[in-house]
Length: 389
Image (tube, rainbow, N blue to C red; front, side, top):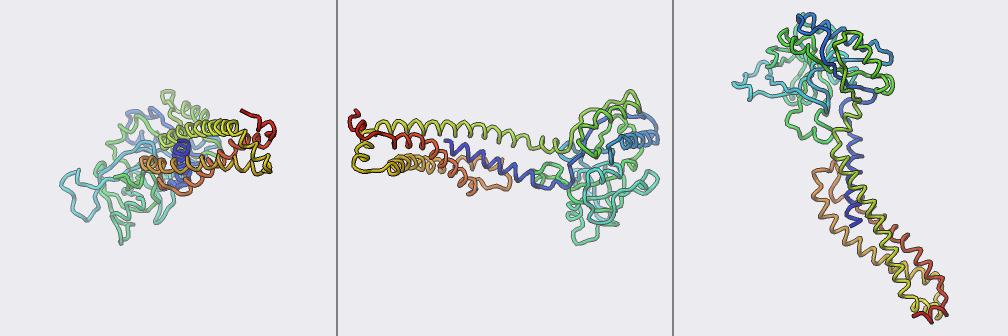
């Protein structure tokens, strides 16, 4: 039973190790996500709303320790999302919206790419010159580029964004971000990503956007150490604006793995308990066996058996029982861990390294637990043992 639990816990540990080594497609270190209820131009004109958000972003950037800041609509990786139907210009428009391809969309400030440090593969990112007065442009991720323009040049192509009723030119191709999580993004139905400058949102959306917004900021140190200063900066813009929901990107990523982490901790706790019980049990069994074999040990020693021979005799008996338990436990663990396939990531349910390491660990524990009783057996006085009943 100890082997079953310890093997299961070991597989979860290896899974978490593999997950944390996965590249999310951006740099999460020193990035803070926060939300602001209200805006500096609630229900204002579209121009007032745009300028209000621009001023808010500039105020956040001016906070000491903030190296970059960006407004973001549509959610950030592993925390919220917004999907947008689209079709490629020059191809037949689907008759129904439900027949259109769908992509995740991000309405951002041009500095979003500096905050998140998403790699640029081709072309350019959005810039401060991409405003409501210039033709609409978008950056897409490599997933959408491969899906829609495989074998073609994506730059210069146009996407029709159904939600905005806009035709936008593709000016850049960025790396893919694992929006749905380090472990589940590859199997998600919607993976393509489109980035559009917030200032290019149509005027009709400005009133809705003005009720609240999300931001990401890159800091020069611990993100949480700047929260109070950010609160003060926002309060200085408008007393009706409230900052809430601050989370560092590493914490957001950790939260997306909470189910696996909880399972691993639970199995780990039970495994430690099982190992302790196994060690106590082995110690008790060997102690009892030695006490029952006192006379036999005395006879062996009277006939010339040395203490090393007695020690090895007891330890071999203990290891024989332990190995039998390990073999049975391994067979049970092989059956049980197959049920865990859905929780594992890039680790086989029959991972030989984990099974081997746990088997060796249990053998060592059995050896240590039986050593004291075995050592006690070597100290038996043959004359006393021969009189033992």
